[in-house]
Image: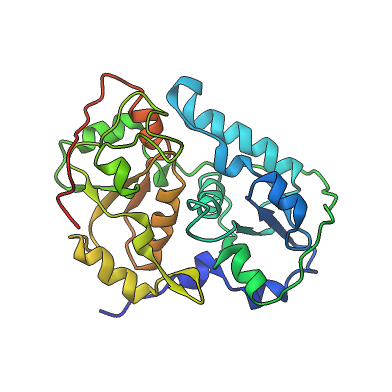
Length: 290
């Protein structure tokens, strides 16, 4: 089938971003560790590491608290609804999808004029584009959120989905997490339980990417469509995606959207929340799919 590509809706290429660097109507966000940012970063970029580290769980008021937290941070960063926002991580594989998580959080808060730098900081450096140590001054403003709950689900909705065969639960974590060897990317016993959400289909998030010049890039929309199709998905599928805290899911969310899948929702609390609630069911064992 012909894919109506949303590739450029979600991604900006290095040469495109280079031409926009001096535009006052853009905000450039670096999601890497602060110490890496301080060594060098793309000129004009501000560091918002919380995009990767903030955890959304019911015990801390979940999505409501997340919205309040990032409304404050984005206001301090000078983001408004009429500013274009570009986000990057080090590379699309080693950052665990943190730039995509930034896009998703902005989407959740109603800001849809945002793109991820394709290939990340490593792609920028590979093109010999400028970097700096200068930390820019920001002009605080009022970021006004317009919450879009249509793209997220809660643990209660995920629990109901286990009994709903119309919904595909897609687990995009690393293999060690899927087979219950590890509870998280932070170590085997970071959360109290290991395993997966019952009835989930496993598709490791790395599958959305391919390597060229040792840099990971998203596959083309057609390649992504064929990939997801091989896991039994089609354009009409209702898909709930989870990982550990909504970063790898955001990478997968973008890939699904670029491939033409519209009915996709992100469980941002993911395994970090699910595994801590002893009342919620889990499965263990080996993958049923490749």
